[in-house]
Image (cartoon, rainbow over all chains, first blue to last red; front, side, top):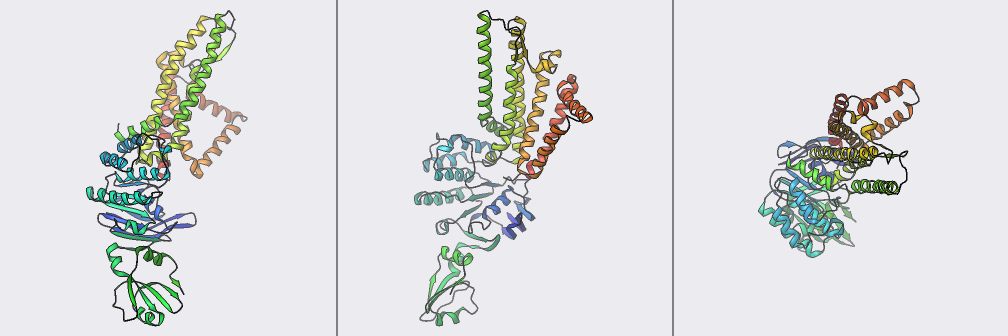
Length: 281
Length: 234
């Protein structure tokens, strides 16, 4: 469905996306994780045909993506994007006219559920509500690929929880590729099936969330006991405090000997180990 | 017309309030001037030696301002609602066609209903209007409308394309070339005649030539805007 073939994007001397190869063959909710400036928005803009790749080929639904051929099958609105200062209901109506297959009923239902006043003008909305409106407009698009850039920015905890429910409802009603870029890893993990980690413009990992849950763990105990166990394991980071060591592993699970504990590594910690400082010795 | 292009046209027409406001303000100010003239004439003041500026000119501001606001403010907002580049280009052209048509119609009505009537009454002096200055009135009301329409459409497409280029180096280069033409051409006789010849064709030339050249240049600018929008980042 989506193919990135050796795609690079440079802004002057800065490489935002560096020779990415990625294939997303089937529907699902994908979580795109990365630090600020890792290349998440550039990745989405390239896929939506908003900007041109410096090198490489992107295809969506078998068709080559370019700025001259913005793919019909990709729905994307940048987070914090400018909107016309129109009533919420008028903006939704306009989006429905502009987007093929826009689910008007779903958009209206979401505005009700999130208590967005349809009579309010865009500039009268709070930051969180503006983000919500953008998210609703993007999510109501029933095309094959939906890109949500920081869709919960400015949301409170209740709104974030409701968003996850609605994301799943939307996906169940119209299964398609939904790529969600976010920093709130553990929350999106409740809805997402797969995780894509991007760092310094490169894809570090593309794997199923369940797979990560199974393969990511921490071995902790005395450094003397833990260190010999790491041979042959994919250690993604270590934390040492005095004589105690915690080694973060991504790979095959082992049964640790007595004196060493094997604990689940949260997605947040897994992400930190993948993109953060690997060692703290 | 494509449903999505029409949606973009409507969005653009709704969201150029600054253009409507400034044009409306100018229009109201000029109407106030005319009302003062009428009151003065009614009180016996002789205004027959006065030369005024027609209301129709001020309506042109709407087209010029819209051609700046649409690409500068509305492009990203339209794409943020799911609009595509080519749809925006086509929708913008439709906006200029509608505005040029509406303003040409209003200006033609003003010319015959106000400028001519006031002048012929002998009380108010001469009203400087586009159809008289450019000779469009020689062929009747339809010519006044169509010649003005063709020129306004060309003006709108020119401003639109130039504004669309401003986020790229070649937009700045185009500005420099324009400034150079405006400042260098007039003092040099052969270049001045080239410039004068160009303006004569698009404004003063016989009806078929004026309309034909204006529409041809408009089409060329519309075609040029395609690669401009393909390269425009969102």
